Length: 234
View 1 (cartoon, rainbow, N blue to C red):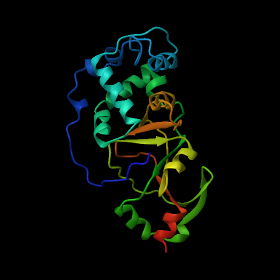
View 2 (cartoon, rainbow, N blue to C red; view 1 turned 90 degrees about the vertical axis):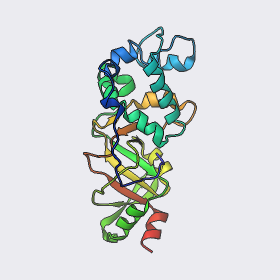
View 3 (spheres, rainbow, N blue to C red; view 1 turned 45 degrees about the vertical axis):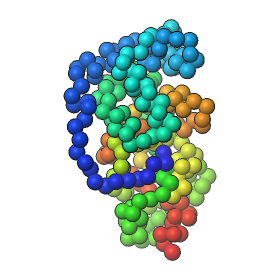
């Protein structure tokens, strides 16, 4: 949740999901009966099996292995390259969220507030903020930390096709050295927070959900840290 809020130029690309075969977008064909239930005694895989309320094991398919590796790497370092590869599987993930909701569907209901912490704001966002009036900002607390929240929705154009968000104010503020973005969960968000917690391993539970796409159907608001607010309005 700390990637730069980014590039405002969209570069067209052919999505892998547009050329995948029907079999490759069929959840059962890709994941079988158990998602990430590889045939071994590793406790790591067993956690995914138990999360689905199942027992036993099942060999991962080739595509399943590739997706597993992408998600495992994402929780370590969420690069743009990984984001693009995950985005290519969006249609598959959406279909899988109906068959395997404990893995692919957020644990929280739509309408839940979500947060995205930013280490720093980019030039375009900084320019936008400077054009606003101080009276349109209201002090709020996120995770016990003071932020100045803009009263009107902003136009947020993320750099990547997939972004990490969290349903935790504490986590959002922890990553929000410069600012925190605030929106609401809807069908654009995928993956169970519990499943992402397993991928994260022994690290903190970031209550992570993943937003797919660069457009947001729900309003996005921005809350600036005290330091950032004073810097921009000095």
